[in-house]
Amino acid sequence: ILIREVKAQVDDRVEATEDEDLAGAAEVFKLALGAVEGEIYQVKNRSNQDPLNFPIKLNNKLAALLGTVEGSENRPTEQSYEVFQYLSDLLDVELGRLHDIFQTDLPALNQSLEAVGLDPISVGHTPED
Image 1: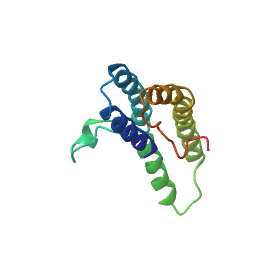
Image 2 (image 1 turned 60 degrees about the vertical axis):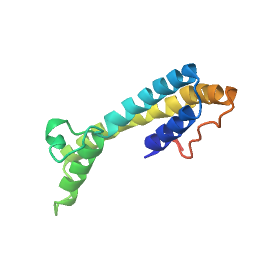
Image 3 (image 1 turned 90 degrees about the vertical axis):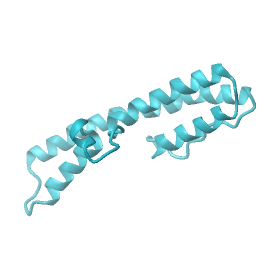
Image 4 (image 1 turned 30 degrees about the vertical axis):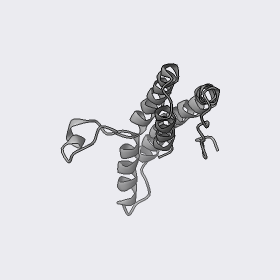
């Protein structure tokens, strides 16, 4: 949700200017965000058939693990803990990438926006908060 909110802000700013350099920088920024989003969530699902055509991502894997753990009357197996740790580590990598984008790429984009008289992109909550 955070990534989509930030992308929408970027789109709004770019629509308000005809600066091609800014549009290019904004597109690169959105591609970086999209790469992280695409690892966490399957963004290609549009129809009922698409989950069969595109692989599941981290959010679905974690949800499936949750269903397995909650569906048992026994305590989680050691394998469940291992899978959770593995998926959690993968998610931490992606959240770290997102944090880096917000710490390095976003300030540069905001400087470009302010240089043409547009409001900066604001992020209310980052993964490290």
